[in-house]
Image 1 (cartoon, protein in one colour):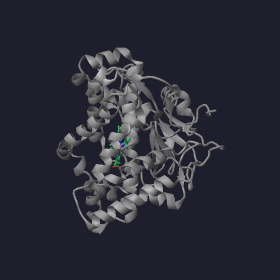
Image 2: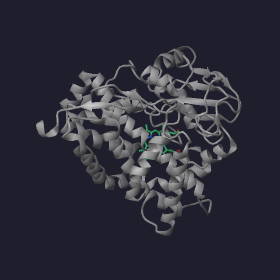
Image 3: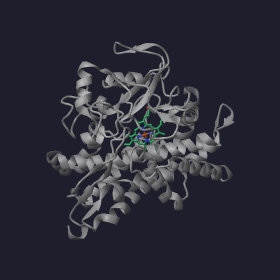
Image 4: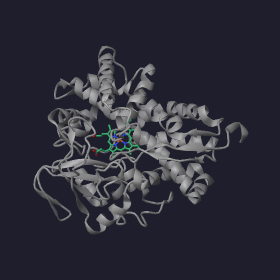
Length: 415
Ligand code: HEM
């Protein structure tokens, strides 16, 4: 049973069928900087991680924006961007990660990895993304039904980030399996009971970096391994952590957006009809509205570096702050009638699904392109695709994620 109103209960999101908007709405209205107490019964998801300290939950779009943009006062480095209290070794790992670096190092690393995410390099990558999207749909189009999450939605993001990072092709499948296990931290029946998946990904990352050091190429891992920060090469741990981060950040997120897209179209037949009336016209904004309405990332954390206040609420130095992206995305101060799903919403792209500020998602442009490529292929070839059967959600405090969604459609040859 979920603890009715505590955000660290991993049963809360699955039991609500998604983010708990009834709580977010009430807090935004009456208690916009809400104190979430710790829970005695919390089961540590990872060795070295506990949750004995409560945290402030931000539910307003403006508060999430302002705190995300102010690294000096609300740090990603101090306690890392994860909500847990971490033992020193775990904290050091998180600080080796681009998302948890000191601002100066973060800037330098970001410069190294930015080029492959640029519009110019993405343009060169597009034909390959289109080709993979086509082959994924080829693999299911004649069947009339499939399990959408793993048969379809997972494949393109994994292929894309492996390619981007320069992973040898014979390892894609392994990275795919490990990435799935690593994201599944709170499931009591999880496949990764001993937490070996993140460590294995870390090691693969280090291995790939070593290969790139010996044999440079144009991949992101090669640029990172050969690049310098403050006149020194990045330590092995940072290279491994970057790989680990991307194997989760670049996979779970994009795949879940594709899954939510199909789910929401199934739940809103009027919007589906509109979409199909002119796919090219409506698809880009429909992707933004899906990201607004059902963002795949639930939260990241910041830590106050001084006694301060947020929206009139005193916050002490060292306090944890929980940035709720789903709550910010339904803030009526920014989005009219925020609980209405509307693919023509003019300001849908004001959502915070990709975060904002110095740590804003580097993969946003790539994710948007992948989603458009895959969804265009799907809706052009098997246009009556729809959820058909029971959907299962991931037990998680991190991701608004579906792990099983059967779908049905008229097989392509019969259409
Ligand atoms: C729909 C898909 C995606 C969503 C919703 C998403 C969401 C996010 C969010 C909310 C952050 C902010 C973290 C913070 O402020 O602490 C972030 C950061 C990041 N994302 Fe994404 N992401 C997506 C896809 C991707 C992809 C495809 C990649 C790469 C292949 C990627 C790579 C990154 C990286 C490297 C960062 C860290 C940026 C930094 O710390 O400077 N993401 N993402």
